[in-house]
Image: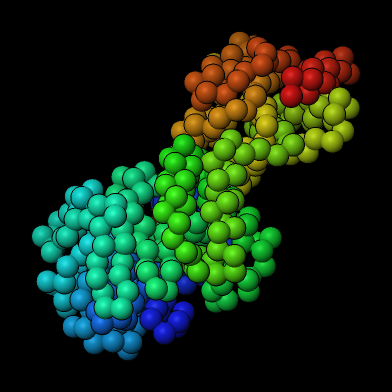
Amino acid sequence: MSFKINDKVTWAGKIDWELRRFHGEEYSTHKGSSYNSYLIRDKKTILIDTVWKPFAKEFVDNLKKEIDLKEIDYIIANHSEPDHSGALPELLKEIPNVPIYCTKSGAKLLKGHYHEDWNFVEVKTGDALEIGENKLIFVEARMLHWPDSMFTYLTGENILFSNDAFGQHYASELMYNDYVDNAELYQEVIKYYANILTPFSTLVEKKIDEVLSLNLPVNMICPSHGIIWRDNPLQIVNKYLEYARNYQENQVTIIYDSMWNATRRMAEMIAEGIKSANSDIAIKIFNSSKSDKNDIITEVFKSKAILVGSSTINKGILSSTAGILEMIKGLSFKNKKAAAFGSYGWGGESVKIITEELNKAGLEVVNEGIRELWYPGDEEAQRCKTFGENFAKTL
Ligand code: FEO
């Protein structure tokens, strides 16, 4: 399938409706995804990015229906990650000498993935490529989200090809932001930001300020995943600025795992306490062993505070708690309060361990947590409720 965006630009990617896991098993894609590749026809013919390897042959076959591959003058590799570069080996078997424009890091990374000595042309921010009536301008976007990432801007048509930035894992044949269900769309936008871009928020803000200061007109933003932003395209840029500036909603997320429901009971009583102290706050409770970890992270991203609980097991914490804490640590959330809780039978190390991990993650731990022996009875449940009330007062 290909799809004409306008007289000069054609979408030539792949919609992957079936995809349910991305980055190995690390990222859930409940609504599939797409790998967006774009063909630009001016006096020169340019291909921006390709697709993931399993679709390489289909991609090249489709491209051949659109053009004679020998007509491709330049390939732009905005990002070397295999979901966008995976079809390069298949394509370059047919046109081995075509120059590949990418950042210096992009050339290094592509060599690292494919061990091919392709015709790389390294570009920097501000470099321009004349393609006929219009030109392409490159903007390095280091660490958004890999060292090699860059944006490419097409003058005349005023299109920003932003690669992963502003993308979503969201399969849709509707292609444009004004055609799709915006609640669905923004759910995938925030999940993508929360799970992938959170650690780079300072750079996101700087890069957006830099691009906006160029005062380039933007008619469309064409990311490498999901739909194209054509209706008020700057809405997604402004949304990213909001996300990058320590975004939070009036929400507390409680994450727990529990062997015999004692820690679960604690979670629910803490939630009651928070609610009784502050009825406006949204409280969401997740069992980390039964919930999608990326959906939990999205809720953490939205929260002003989190509570993490686990039973004690083998002098430690349950594996799903350890897993979600590792993700929280890696994502470097800022400006969030936190505390730990957990039940135990003997030993009772879990609360201390969780507290240490929350500290290491850079969260503002507001107290030493609460632990209860065995299953909470009325007195213990009341203690958890009071703990919740006091926690709410710190927000
Ligand atoms: Fe969609 Fe970083 O690759």
